[in-house]
Image (cartoon, rainbow, N blue to C red; front, side, top):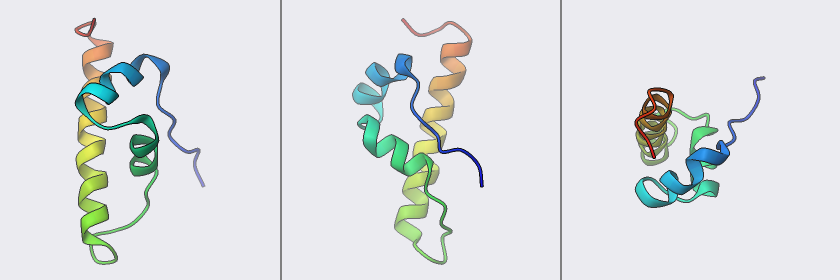
Length: 65
């Protein structure tokens, strides 16, 4: 079993403004369910993962202040 995802310190200010609070982000990034078992939770987790990945790419490219 892999390690759980933990929000990096630099992301906290962006997550609170654009995504969700840190606790909700970490929970959704670590959810291991599928759409058949829990469709709403699965779709919410998929959505947050996309938003987090975008923030990671923008940070890596130096496009965040």
